[in-house]
Length: 256
Image (tube, rainbow, N blue to C red; front, top):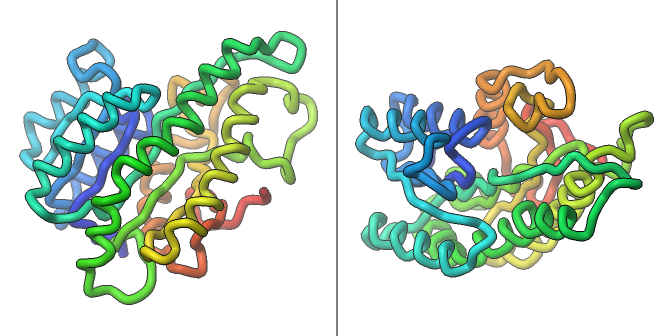
């Protein structure tokens, strides 16, 4: 069972990120600290998140642009201050974007923009919060690895799977597919690099979900609520044997 003292979710103003925050703060024995980050907490797209913060004292909203290193460093300093000497148990790199280009229409600009958010962003955020994750791991009485102790969850997609690449749409949203394949490699490298610190690293496919992004490429079968319930259940069952793996919201392995 997932039992974290503190969690940070990037891209938390809508979609899966917002629902993750909502389900964390809605738990009867939820985290003491839930840090929700997004690029513009004062903008119109963050109103639902702000409404949640009014009702839940443990929810802290912070501005953070995952493509801006100084913005990440400022957020990390604020989280450190809030935690008052404690570590961060769970980092969920959820922020992501997609540009609807295929193999013929893809541009260098769109590919670079998507990589900056979907690959470089999670790398920089993980580096910035590594001291807090290490602290949580070192001070935990738990043996082995778990998401309740210290973990990085990179929100990936089956769209980045080379092994299960589909047929007719395989050339569509090229930038997104390539970025998620690269994110999967980042996850594997993090799992090796942070193993000595007992920080669990996982790439997670949330399913094809009824969000703004999911609906931009068709008619997704999964509700956000169902996906996030599955994600939280799966995170609660992961151990060191899952470190560096690629799983879906139900905990099943996804082909690389």
